[in-house]
Image (cartoon, rainbow over all chains, first blue to last red; front, side, top):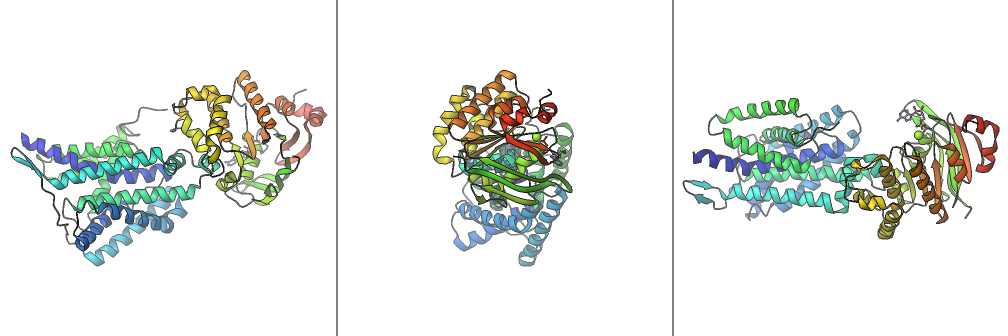
Length: 286
Length: 238
Ligand SMILES: Nc1ncnc2c1ncn2[C@@H]1O[C@H](COP(=O)(O)OP(=O)(O)O)[C@@H](O)[C@H]1O
Ligand SMILES: [Mg+2]
């Protein structure tokens, strides 16, 4: 009885990390209509980046999020100019191919360096024990970090000049140009933020579970499910939907083998696409 | 203030393979209200968008206060005070009225006077102040047009180009917007107006260009153009 409850709490905590990852995917889609297939690879790089950085510094892994995010932003700018800028206004297939190519390169290089064997970040925060169950400190810190980053992003988009420019470009790129906003610069910034979110979520996951260079793929899949649940291009909705997905996983995982979960998630994905094509948070609009 | 503020020299442009403008030359004098009239599909919108750079000119030059800005992207032209209030309003639908107006003051040029300009806009359109926290997509057509015009004013225009000021508006509101234009002109703003209400356009403007099939067959002081037989027949229905 308390088993499922504990499992759902765990799911809720992990779900906020799913949500953070999905925010990155959702932001990039919302601003530039690009489906970023480097997403999974960036999550994996976040895992290995955290691994390297933690082993090099041995300081609190959650403090290392700041340099990880900075690195993610730089990486995002590089990928934007290499692979995205020239496909932004082309048919969607072009950006799918181009980001998929980057994905394959990153995974290829990563496999050469780290092989596909599992790694883990050897850091743990003491947990809290309630009755017979212990909530691990890492889960709580990861969730807290994810929510904090999500709130900071939301404030950035609502309050700052650059954040508003991002929203304006997402809303109407031509009109944004007329206002004196360099839309190319804004797309670059938005893409970099999207990548940084993927990297940050990967870094958080690395403090929870062992991982390989291929682990990003599973989280990419979850990000797609979450993004579709939330409605494409709604970053904050993605956080909420991520938490919902985590809860769902937590609720079913005591009863079924873990390998069934992707199947359930994909089933949900298809179902949502059919029933709520604009996401569960959208009212029917004409 | 009768220097040329904006000049198009032999501009050709179009979409893909389709040519729309076949070498048009326009001179907009500083402080004046210049209008471009012409039938639907004549190329008026294309002319303004090409001036802005949203549509790339195929050949010809665009000069802003004597400076060649032909190759600049729209945002760079906006930064120099060339402002377009586009056809169909083109607001930011998910942003509030206040945010839409704020985006008008985005450029370095417009930012220092953001506060004064906002007061000016709210004074001209008190309705917008009442609705400042509402999403722009929830406004009526007329209110949206006020936001579009207000946003253009927030941009601190040197040359203000307006595409279809009164399209789809109730006559009373159209009148009000035209009065606003007059005030703006008195404040020294150079205005280029595209307007399907040719009577009004000719009445308020100083100089008129007639655009037909991507060329300029007729131009002149608005009073004179209004008296021409071919204009009266083709555009005024007289
Ligand atoms: N985005 C576009 N793509 C292709 N053709 C267009 C586009 N916009 C306008 N046109 C064509 O260009 C011509 C001129 O249109 P436009 O400049 O909108 O005229 P006006 O504003 O005078 O009504 C028309 O034949 C129109 O069909
Ligand atoms: Mg038009």
